[in-house]
Amino acid sequence: MNFLSDLKGRAQLVINTSRLSPRELRDRINQEFKAEDRDIFNVQVMSFGFKYGLPLDADVVFDVRFLPNPHYIDKMRPLTGKDKEVYDYVMKWPETETFLDKTLDLLNFTLPFYKREGKTQLIVAIGCTGGQHRSVALTEYIGKALKPKYETIISHRDMKRRKES
Image (cartoon, rainbow, N blue to C red; front, side, top):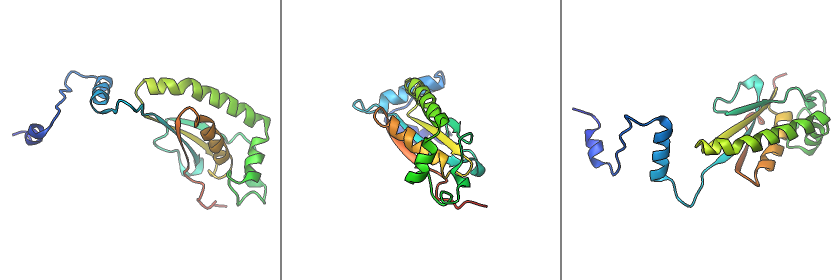
């Protein structure tokens, strides 16, 4: 006896998946359950520290360890990229401006295609060594830049961790 036969008998909808590709199944589920008045797609921009490992659920990862590190300035070490002094320090470099221009250009180009392919969420992870300074400042900037076009969540995975010296 099939363990699911009782459950199938109580179901309001049964979808035969034997001849459906994963994309066709997703489209069918969206057709059945998606609210007509809501187009679901959001972007999560997350900072992290490489020394704590990559975020496993990240779709796109940017490494910003090439930028000057405020960690080596004693008065900035205990601060984060959300503090104005650190934020301004990270943003003052020409390479930061170029990185932001190119990254936002890439994201603005690719996000509509991720959405078209049926993704409902895209996680953009921005990493520096400890996840305190550079990645936090850039995550704040990129997240705020994307908010006018997309539902955007800004998070900082490792910002509150204590640095190991």
